[in-house]
Image 1 (tube, rainbow, N blue to C red):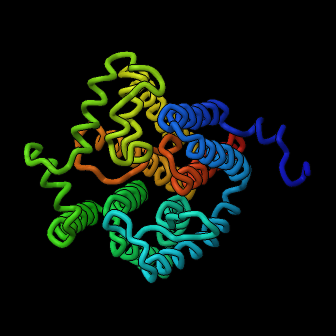
Image 2 (cartoon, helix red, strand yellow; image 1 turned 45 degrees about the horizontal axis):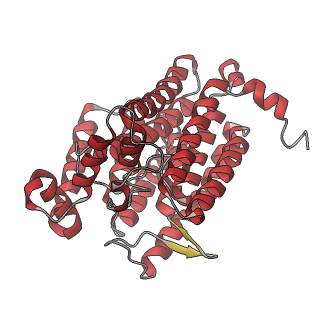
Length: 356
């Protein structure tokens, strides 16, 4: 057992502060789930996912960078096939076909694509920089394939997240200003395409810019939840608008926190997320391995951008995107995906890596 997982060695090498901060984020999600769900079934499921995610994160954080690449390649291939299978079966929910039924569970393959792809994309970028042009071709093809499969669901929130994170990796790797402009143009083109060809995207954007038009009550209820909560909240389980906000336990969990736990608690959540992001990025100052640097940038940007999108959507700063808040929102796919992402980040920032 010691040769498989040495707990004492793991604790010595791991970034203890970030591990504790991430664990606190997981606990916050459990508290909100208990506060939100009168039914013990949802809370019990969330608790099972949270505990499973915690141990997955610990296990993955013990792996070496070379092993992470192999694991990522294996599971990336599996989940690309899963994306194809999703499109072949009609399991449409709220205008999108994102879910795969498996052994009684609903699986969202696009959630799992993120951490595995950003490890592989970092490795492919480095191979391309080292003069192996074939790997750059594989990088472009894989990116276009994954983006296309997710667009076809359609899930433009996830597509934008992958787009932005991928180009953050390319920029850190030395992307030319021409390609930066081209990338921004591609994102704008995708935005126009989404707006004019998908009714639910058009509806969200129109209602965001014309709040008096009615018919889209999520944002109104969300903002009222923050207003009702005030500084200290109405107390756990005492919120009333959570019963009226669609997707309160996933896309609008931050609004629930605002009503029941208040502005100060929400500020603590934001501070916690920012601290985790800053601490991981500060690790880059000690790094020498370009693969590890680009991987950390990708994974950290993915976590940061997803958190930003969820919080800004709840506050009506941007149109709603259907994006979960990592480790806090309810959902097995989201939580397991977040545990993989954090496990990879902790593995790549172990103390011994700085001295190799």
